[in-house]
Each structure stands twice: as structure tokens, then as C-alpha cells.
Image (tube, rainbow, N blue to C red; front, side):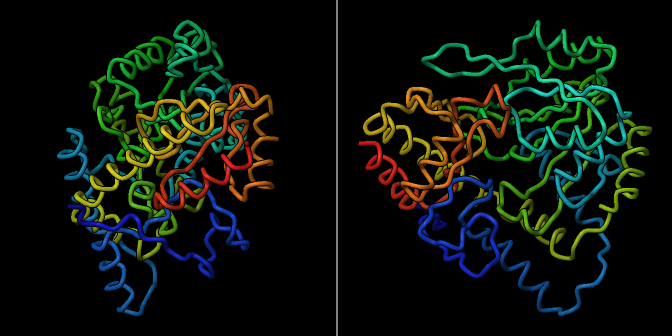
Length: 388
């Protein structure tokens, strides 16, 4: 029997939530946060901290580091040393920190495309040039995405390329990279003197039959050639509490990262962030396991509905994240026009694929299925009705 209620509709009006429009008739399947309450352990820890009544500057104690180290060791077999951990306010600020610490303006940063939209802006804001290594579909029928290895190596071999910015698991295609793929990425990067920065914020959102592989735990070579960015924010729905970690084994890189954290004024976290992280990693593992099962059920519901009622949709395989990537080329509409139509005619807000690559994302939309199943079904029913 389920222990937690993910079917509950949570009224978010008046909360200032970015995801929800003032027009509450619009169903928001876009911004990557969840419509589920945080685990009871997190809610209790936050309430207890709030009762104190003083919310001044916060020291991060030993128990914070112990929670991180214990979680990744038992959950993923990754042995992290305390001195490798640097905390900051979020993964996007951590991306900016890593790029400022490890690149010089004018250098090139390789990313896989389509890719998380903030990668584009973070690279450009650091004064670097975006280089897109285009992901390829193995076949039109499966829509399984993989690297074009020759193209990836050619991009890394450019003498101006210094960093590979990786999304692991991958947003928006839903790929969970295998150990073999990650090792091959690193071999190519090391051959050309390219450092790896791996955004692993979705690492706990893994669908049945797949296993997340931390990049730094693949091999000692990967550990020494990488900077890892992670946070409990996506997996436990606590993004607004602003807590994340940068993990790096290289002492000199770590010194530069720490300096960039301070130069960019993202060194102070709020009092609730560390409290929530400890409650997530120490007391909420069963909640997370049940969440992943519920998300898998939502994905299966989406696939069945699309097959029966939305023949112009081809839902790509979802190995990780809660963000299915949907091929809508059969509609004959551009991604932006189709997303606009869904909002205008159906009251459903989705992300056009071109957010994740102007060329590589064309013909796709991205959905957020981290919501009660009844809300997902309402959105899909509206879309189906407008397509008839």
C-alpha cells in the first residue's frame, strides 16, 4: 500500500509560485518543479527550524557534510570526501561558478544539444562560446538519443575548447547516461585537455530499469577530471530553499571554485536549506522511492493516452527526470506555434522544444508530469479534445 499521497491536489494560489499562472484554469506542465508537498520529514524539519524565530546568517555544520557523504555512498556507491564539497545557493549559480573558475573569456564550452536552456545563457554570460554537439536519434521509431561520437570528439579537439558541460541525467531528452558512455566521454575529453562539469541535479529521478551513474564514480580518471554539481532540490521539491553542492577532487580547481563562489556572492545559504537537505538525505529515502514509482505511473499514463488519442505525438523514452520529450513534428506546426496553441485553446502550458536548442529542439515539446495523475489526465483530455 502507498504510504504517501501523491494524488493530492495542492492549491498554490497566493504562494507566489512561478509555475502557476494567476489564471488558475491554466494547467502548468512547464517549469521543472513538482506539484507535490515535500516529504513529511522535510516539512517537520522546516517547521521546527521556523519555530526558533531567528533567521540570521547560517553556519553549515558537520552533520550537513555527513548527510551528503552517507547518501551518495549508500545510494550510488560514490565515496565523497568532506574536503571535496563546497556548498552554494543553487545548481545554476554553481554552473556559473564552475565556468568562471575553469574558463577564460573567448574559450569554447561543449554541450550536448538539445540541452537545458540555462546552459546556453550560463556559457555566454561567462564570456565563452557555445559549441553544440548534436545528439542523434537512433531511430525514428524508438527516439532513443545518443552521442555522435565523431562529432563530439571533433568539438572537443578544437584548441579553444576547455570545458564539456554535461547534463547527467539529460534534460530534456530523458537519457540516463550509462557508465560506458560516461567513461568514453571522459576519455575523449582527457585526450584533448577538456575538463568535465557535470550537472547531476536530476540524479535521484530515475525510472525502473535504469540506474544513475555519478560521473566522478566511474573511475579515478573521471573523478580527477570533473566538477560535479548536485542538489536535493529537484528530487525533493525544495528548489525555493536554495541549497546545492559543488564536488571536486582537484585541490587547485577547488581553490578556484571557492574563490569564484565568493567573488560571485553565492556563498551564503538560507537557514532552511541545510535543514531540508539533511531531512531529505537522512529521512526521506522511502518517500523518494515511492515518488519515482508514481512518476513512472504518470509516464505510462501519458504514453497510453498519446497512443490512443494523440496520434501526432511520439513520446520519447523516459529513463530519468520527470520531463518527457515529445516529438510533435506530425502536427505540421513549429514547436513554438504548437505550445502557443495549447495555451490558447486548451489552457495547458508546456515548453517549446526550441528553448533547448533553436535547431535541435524544433519539432518537440517538453512536458512536466510531476503532478497528481488527475491533473495530468485533465491536461491530456483538453489537448485531445482540441485536436479532434
